[in-house]
Image 1 (cartoon, rainbow, N blue to C red):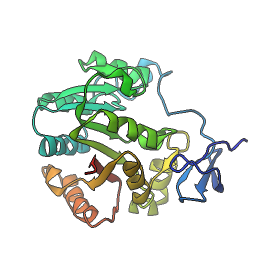
Image 2: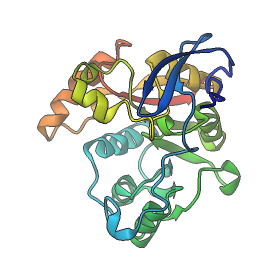
Image 3: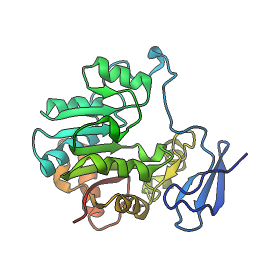
Length: 261
């Protein structure tokens, strides 16, 4: 099996194979320590060949708790009526919530089936990978929610996002963390982290901070004020956000970037 992928963060060709998992070789960059799949099966994980009756959803699903946190963060940082672009809009759960909250929404989704369901649900979604040349305006917020772990070039994606975010806008990135305490449970680790058919990049906080920096952005954790506080899960996330503010991220990386000044 050919190991021909260089480090997606620093482009070093020097790497050390760390483990084999489900037929995939996972290695560490010798220069920057980034952990990634050396031989991914495809550019991104996709449901483009999935039939409609086999899809996870057949209509736009209800928003998840983190979607409320994202919507709150956008309103708190850039205000009401924001122009929002989502990279990897999935089935449209976040988009529907943002429109309900009076924001203007545009999504990019390369999975044919997901973009079809979101579009049929009334959302403006482009069936394509994100390309800044396909938009002719700047946006108040760019959302990249659980996407970076799937793509070959995460740094380029954030750099492209920074091109179309306004000077006072934000780029929101949520991504799994190598330091997530839940990884101590083997079942959770295997089901939610080591998924080399889909997850091809494994981020530490320092890795994500480096990606932001290369795009001219400063990384900031989600503030406690963005957490809804209406369900039991929110209590955990309020505690998490307080810990995140110290620079230690015990669970997934919930972050946003502002243009460095």
